[in-house]
Amino acid sequence: MSEDRSAARAIDALRRGWPVAVSGDDGRLVLLAVEGVDDRRLSRFDPAGTSAVLLSAGRAATLHLTNQRDAATDGGAVRIARVPWLDLASAVALADPALDLANPLSGPWQTEPVGAHQAAAAALRLARLAGLLPAFFISVEDGPAEVEVTAAAIMAHDSPARLAIASRARLPIEASDACEIVAFRNPDDAAEHVALLIGQPNGQPPLVRLHSECLTGDALGSLKCDCGPQLQAALKAIAASGWGVLLYLRQEGRGIGLVNKLRAYALQDQGFDTVDANVRLGFGIDERDFGVAAAMLRLVGQDRVSLLTNNPQKVAGLEAAGITVQARVAHAMAANPHNHHYLETKRDRTGHML
Image (cartoon, rainbow, N blue to C red; front, side, top):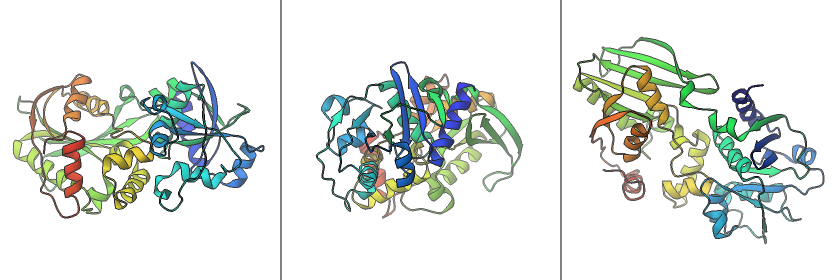
């Protein structure tokens, strides 16, 4: 089995509640995702009831379960020793911040050396790719697993280098009837990204918008964000410019997936902003990979663009991947009573130029 295929199989196994072994240069870990497990599966995985729990450093720090060195390791993991009162319900409460108010955590909890740091960090990334909470039971026997996968395979799983054009067709849209849609696939990633080529090349860098998928805003009219209005305004602005490209990136919830985004919404209802909600879930502030957008642009023959954005990370991400951003064009939407705090958080905590 190739490493790339093993990463795809490992994602599928996690979603099915099967154990997965992740190996790095510093060791091997056999893991069972906390999310979705039941007593029967946990008992089969860990009959002695001695498996430790692996959490992200960010989540562990939120719960005051780690020392400063562990918490400061970006993308790192913290291992919680299994004690008699750490049962399945307690592990689920450790993993899911939406339960924090309903399940005040007692303890005491004891951290212990992770050991295989590279494998542990890769496992947390694998959980995100699977759309699951980044929390695992760790087999103390280090025994058999449904799928074996390396840390390197996980890191390379959704590499933009493997992206290719899958199909293209004419697509008249409300903003312009001179539009072509281009679909992209990565052979080891279920996400299918899309580009809309609007107008005709005119010798100038196209006006480009990177739009990350937002089901709630784009399709359902959510007022909690500005994604829907941003999408429609971008299409109109590109059409008015005469030539441009809208990239629709399948990176829901800043890369944490739809289910975890809704968990972040629930935390926002408890008073946390979008940044703190993501961190409490155990993820980074922004997990998106703008190298995907750069690969899409190169595949449609564009390496120099004017970028329609207020997010400096998009500019930096494209330029780091070899796309020249000739100009940044502001793209701000008016606030509503439901998203004004969200927009302020983007300005004050993630550097958006609103």
